[in-house]
Length: 160
Image (cartoon, rainbow, N blue to C red; front, side):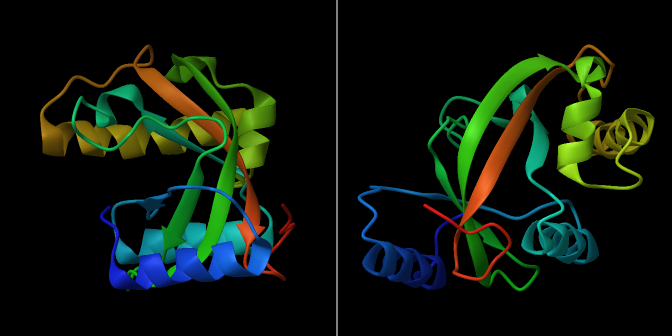
């Protein structure tokens, strides 16, 4: 997603209020529909969701920057309104099928089990593959990202 005047203002408020010396941010929204965007954001704001997964192929040269530990991410809702900022704490790249129980739990979706996580992500990435014309398979390289909320105050586990 692209930065907007609203995300820039949210970012500037974060910097001024926290004294952070972070120099940049990226913008994300979850999922592929307004309902999914808001549902998953709700899990983040409630403190349930502290991880997310994406495909390595979603970060081509010249596209969105590949996630890095220490990144700041402004998360927007389905109306593209900024709602929180997270800081990436861990990045692991491995095949989709190598997700572990702890990551499935941290992602906070469904019943939080590995089996449910795999079923949901296989379905989501299969639909993405059908739209974008690539082959989906269990060995597809996946970015497993963990994060902590750093803004706004009062958001679940907000901290430096």
